[in-house]
Length: 210
Image 1 (tube, one colour):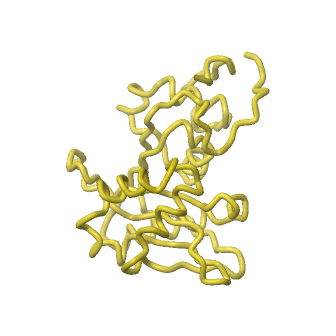
Image 2 (tube, rainbow, N blue to C red):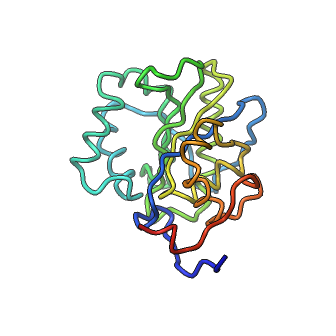
Image 3 (cartoon, rainbow, N blue to C red):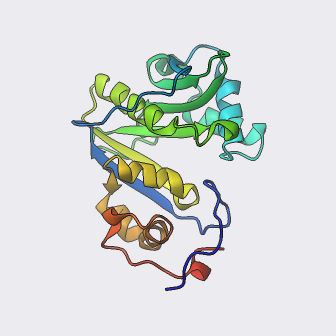
């Protein structure tokens, strides 16, 4: 297989899109401290647009309207649940710069009782500052305090670096998704070379991009 010569962004629309789903136990989640000067805060009324701004900065949305549509789909009418589920990372200037939510399958299709990790995002200018693992593990601990024992993490190939973080934390593809998104997991194997994906073959660079 040829080497990877393209420098892929951490949220790269050039990568062929496959929906991915990981799962894992909440029994022994590691804790990673935030860098000095940062702290956690839960959602407060009025944080909707801040959430959209963070997600838009992380390239999850193209514009405000797309972010608003996602908010309405996932959280509108459920805001009272966010006060102990949606977490923000706040900097020294009291600016919210990252977010993730300990939630559940809003479609009601998942009957396993697992918690779902939703919408993990770090503002563009704060990426690479060591915020993602502290944020993710903190929210997973929040999920555990809410009574969940198992977590599922929906994601996609375009955010391949985030998938690597989840693999590093011990989460693995759910068996059904490993079959249905087999090519997607091959893309992740190629980009991350993660040893947890030993059952998946790497692929040529030309087959990764759209």
